[in-house]
Length: 248
Image (cartoon, one colour):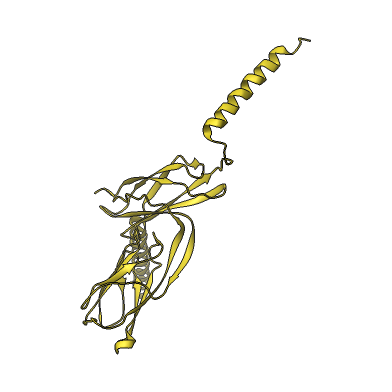
């Protein structure tokens, strides 16, 4: 009888672990969107339409191009008054969700050094007893933090570490996702060498998705119109050549 109870407890523990892992997987899946590129092959300087689904509702979207790059900033420009919020804007964006860390140094005014950690959903957390709130917008690079005390007149030194993408190709007229989490944006391919590159879309809530784009470089001065003209001439010359060949 004791053996049967032991087996039941083991099964119950295994089921609990399985359900926990299943919920974690569902949570991760719900935070991932998807994008398609049209066309999937384009020349440098050409236009590509990015269509996204499964992103957050009514959220800002940033689009990065190329490899991930480690970013680091010190003595960051900020604004704010009283307890805050105090905030500013990163030098690069969009940024990778979960990669942002912020440090606030107010020791010059008798304060403390406070560290903030990116929760991956646009919110910052901190173990400081003076922490009230903090946020990072992955799509725009805007950040802020609010303290429990009045910091007016106290020098604040801010520094941050984060991961961004080689090129920011977010359209100038940056739009939001729809209420169903979809979006469509037209980007311009940067002046890069031929090859395969990653295009990454990130929204302000931490949802992201990537797709591959093949860049085919057209030689300078050789436009699409010129290429079509050259191709047409080649076909005509080739046709006349074969017509003039003597029959054997």
